[in-house]
Length: 245
Ligand SMILES: C[S@@+](CC[C@H](N)C(=O)[O-])C[C@H]1O[C@@H](n2cnc3c(N)ncnc32)[C@H](O)[C@@H]1O
Image (cartoon, protein in one colour):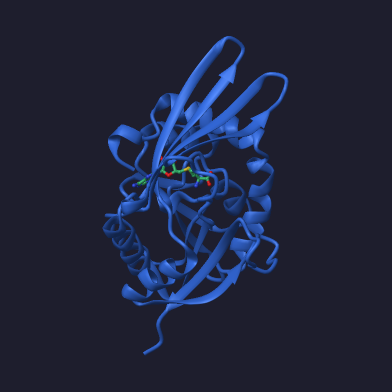
């Protein structure tokens, strides 16, 4: 994520609210239960750890979780929630760690916040290098939703309740596989905007990029309960291991 789109203090406070409004907080326990199965030696690293939505319930299951994030504001929220998780400021496309982990994971579409192909491959390479020999990389990505764009633009209402209206205004840049996606949050008499630039990838491109850095796809699921990934799935959870030579 470039500085222009980074999670500043306003974004961080909004992120906490929006995850609750969208039921993402409740989903975190199911995510942690899924991830725990890949941590037999007890260690995990989250890429883009944010406020610890997933890392905290995973650490409560006895896993030693560490994390990296490039936002001071998100790291502050995490530090407020727990002192059990070691997290440091860094770029998930350019980090190294002396420690090796059983599990490295990147959830909730965070990988697409690396908005170029080069950054995404670099991020996968850093993730692969942080894995121990039998380690597992888990990535949760949303299937690109590219229908209904008119002249490269689309607006979608994503949540309406008595107090809040959330509208997503998306601009498509097909040459770079980028979406500039702005959330407009109407609440009371105020409107706030939260822009992000992301590079969407289909699962097969993700597999190819992973192969470039010595990883191979081991599993793919449509949800955290290990439902099948089908042509109707809106997301996938892809599991990678080191390529056996
Ligand atoms: C969608 S939030 C996900 C947070 C958390 N993983 C969760 O599932 O709730 C994306 C997080 O990734 C961080 N982030 C975005 N780009 C990053 C980068 N290049 N390097 C490190 N962190 C990044 C943001 O600051 C934010 O905390």
